[in-house]
Length: 71
Image (cartoon, rainbow, N blue to C red; front, side):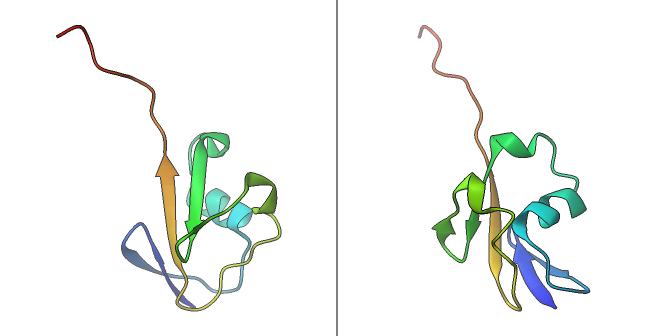
């Protein structure tokens, strides 16, 4: 099955959940990653029950802390 993750085409052998996809791609600190599936941000509690389908577009969104220093 062909999907796109963060703009890159990937092949999967079978249908997997978003939670499994995070593990397959060795996402560090998955609790700090938001996932967009076909333009919709998923709730973290839906990761296990949301399955990737042919031609889905997934974005892993990493939020980083920080801010402007004293200019």
